[in-house]
Image 1 (spheres, rainbow, N blue to C red):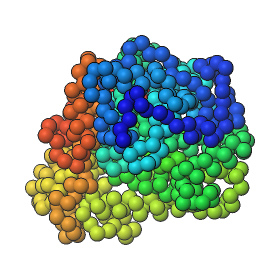
Image 2: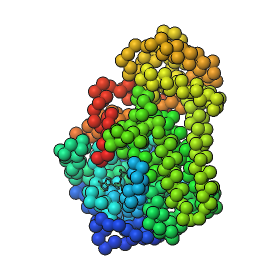
Image 3: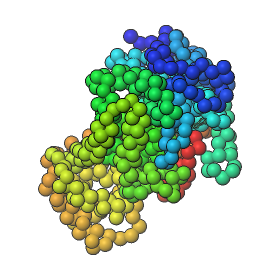
Image 4: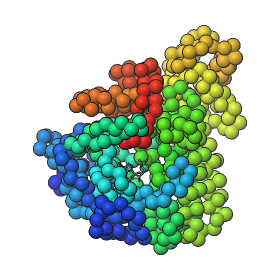
Length: 518
Ligand code: AMP
Ligand code: MG
């Protein structure tokens, strides 16, 4: 059964089940106590316009695609929050978090407004929320808005990650708000006005590690218990309400998620505990990026350029650190500390096993064991030394690299290189030796590797091109990018989308480096 904009009704499961905050002045920033969510409606937006729509996400939700101009108009109103939550209750989630390693206190949905839940085509309850829909008690003096630029990034990534097979929140719609929003993108004291937008985000839950942390930090043990019971019953029923079992499963899911990110070269950029999902989903797409030349300490986030806390290579370790914060937050519920610690330590083995399994699939091997770690590291060392493009090099394993030796091998690698220097004798020896070993070990036909090594990933410069066109009113670049990203394991008709990073994108803001200003 497909629901239309008119027949849609939201459930209030999370809202009804957990302690509520009913503020008299919901746009007044304040410290909320003893509640999991605050009632707040979206703010009026001057001229909502439907800019993009994910038919795939809609089909999963059992929603009809808007077919004509009046239906697009109705969808724009609904997904800009202008009709509230039909049948439901709008609210913002309360959470805290560790930002860049430090406890930041109450954060919460400062610009996200939840509409409630819909049951999807598989019978799973999905929460729908609007990012950029206005101020809440958690806005801390900020404007509750999101700009088109960052909304396009989140919209595209949500759907692209799903197509890549990575657990993620989804995006149903991208709506222009008709408002101009002021942002200081370069943090240089020269703000400019940018078009505002709203993304409809979809996930079984948007609860983060930080939702647990806030109750623990403020000794709201009852509320913590209720939140934990709710999340366990809704999302981890197989654990039978056992806090240790639940925690261990969160650790395992997060480890597998990190193996996905690392095997694809994805860098999240802001792995604060308020940006890590309790379901092990990728959430909160901000200053993320995709490795182009393989550089272990690369981060796209300018705010982190000095410390590099959230650089590519550190991501698994940071995820484990964040899970340590979750473990500490669960302590007031009385689980044996030693058992939580054991579950946290198991992250390492779970991550390694998952990462090696993904690398084995990417390389067409039966398995990669701990004894192969050095061999795998040699490949990464070669890629780093020759500044090889991460995605393109793996993709080429099913093409020229499958056979090439000697000069042909070096030429085949050069096609994916950003290196300016010539090959050194050591680099040549490493390449020839590593690929000879790989040719001997590969167990499947090269074509089979294509299903594990994407041809197209949402590189920041591709997004920048789509954003530039969209800001000028042309959505066609975004549509073409999205169509290619919906089938990331097929070579795109437009080879540009699978290309090396162009020179113009190398140091351009919004491509190589991104601020958190969004
Ligand atoms: P983020 O870095 O996007 O994960 O956001 C961190 C915190 O800042 C969250 O509590 C957000 O809700 C809040 N926040 C970010 N931007 C805004 C904004 N424009 N208005 C209100 N709150 C915001
Ligand atoms: Mg966030």
